Image 1 (cartoon, rainbow, N blue to C red):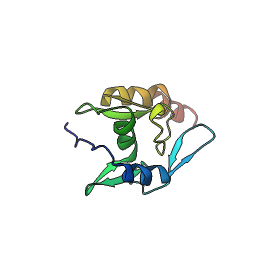
Image 2 (image 1 turned 180 degrees about the vertical axis):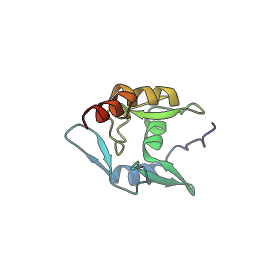
Image 3 (image 1 turned 90 degrees about the vertical axis):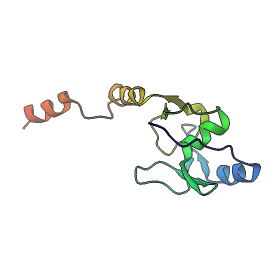
Length: 116
């Protein structure tokens, strides 16, 4: 799957970006601007809307490999702290979800049935 390359922000855009960030107690940079239907921050650059976490990663950590997703070490969809972000495959992201208990597994549903 090919994704649109995220452009680097100008100084003015970077100032606008940082103005929409609130640093939490967990050191997450929580996005206070627009969000998409999945709860991720959304930011328009050059007439295209990007995930705010993807913009942050690209700006501070470097380019995103074509087809990669940006994962959150902190499991906070609103977080745009570049230190909390890493890139990887869709498979890596799915493995993160399973390991951290954010996906309903066969065992989850079996436990529900057993407890009825």
